[in-house]
Amino acid sequence: MSGVLITAFEAFGGRAGNVSLETLKRLQAEDWGEVELHPRVLPVVRGEAPSMVESFVRELQPTVVIMLGEAAGRSSITPERIAVNLDDFEIRDNRGNQPRNETIVKDGPPHYSSTLPLDAMVHRLQQLGLPAEISDSAGRFVCNHVFYRVAHYIAQSGGSVSCGFIHLPRCLEQSEQRFSTEDLAEGVKVCIKACLGE
Ligand code: PCA
Image (cartoon, rainbow, N blue to C red):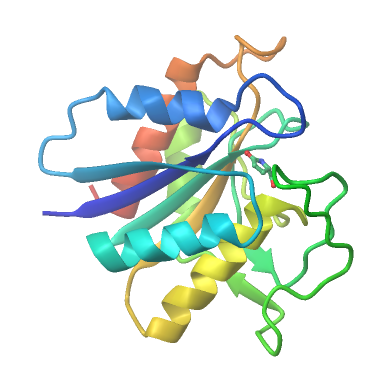
């Protein structure tokens, strides 16, 4: 059975909700058949969130790790290509941390690449009629931080886990965007299938 760890974030920056969390709840309610889906929610806190993902990976031994986050300014679903070794928070995280221009892992590589099948995911999203493109920047805030730390952990532990990050645009319920959380959940579902080669 294929184990998929999928994470979403709580609200941050004084906003009421987080589209990644609403999307995760919808995914959780679906029937996954042979796929063992492990949904988990993360605090928007540097350090704490990646440590949680690392312990989920140790505990659950998934074959795929997909982390979801909200990117308010975007209007398409954007699988991230890379995580960079830099924290430069323009706002505070939910514990008040605001590192500026700080390396995430001392002596770590400048970046890690997603090991998810990015082209296949974008193709399948577009087939569903959902705007999607690969993004070259996961930002410099908590999403990039978690992506970098988790990719580093997986690289260090020598495992073959596929790991990557998908930023979601805000949804219809939050803004004038045309996506509903149902659309976004459908989108993430095809991405999961692409990761599993289904
Ligand atoms: N988005 C933020 C952090 C949590 C989230 O959902 C980011 O893009 O870093």
